[in-house]
Amino acid sequence: MKQNSVLAKLKNGETTIGISLGLGSVVTAEIFANAGFDWIWIDAQHGEFDDAALLGALQVIFPTPSVPIVRPGSNEFFRIGRALDHGAEGLVVPMVNSAEQAAAAVHAAKYPPQGGRSSGGPRLGLFGEDYFDRANEEVLVAVQIETAEALAAADDIAAVAGVDCLFVGPSDLRTSMQVERWGEEHEAAIAEVLEAARNAGIGSGIACGNPEDALKRADEGFQLVTCGSDSSLLRVGLDATKAALRR
Image (cartoon, rainbow, N blue to C red; front, side, top):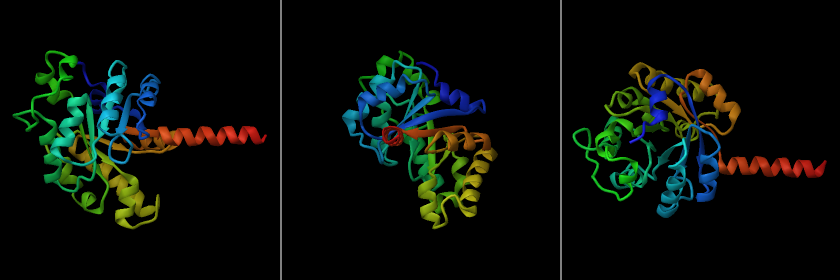
């Protein structure tokens, strides 16, 4: 099994930049995977990825240096195991609000004795004869802190064995807290998650919508950072094209 370069950098205190896929297009996944980003975030929660599209995306990302990280639709044993059996090298598990829920995500992602993941999947043989021996140490497990409840439990969540990263979902966190977007309280909450991860000696991540925000969060210390998505880049490109035509 190849080394998970993103997880290795995370453990070494380095920042990695990813880009998010939500449109459900395997061709877009192939183009993005060959663009040189550290990792590709396949969003099966809010994105348009059904099971077949998820498999297709993972197949085209596999031959490239980019690490495929999947956000499953929910923190469920089957969904997590399915994503990993398809070939995901990491997870961003949504809506983790307690240490118990974080432990459930780890349990689904790790083979015994660290967890309860089932040993199966016809694709796993492609990843090396040692996959079952090394998967527990190479699969990245990030859990999303995106509610007021999760924020209050951030220290406990960060302390769960097998959690590699606290990943902020800024939009849902703001909505849950009912505060001004990017206002003082919102930013303080984001900083609190970063501090909880630091205190626990694990990684931190955050979803950003553009390169400027990604660089800002990286400078703050976040290590697993997105810089946009397929849909946002499409909109930016369309706006730029329309503006050029008007000139």
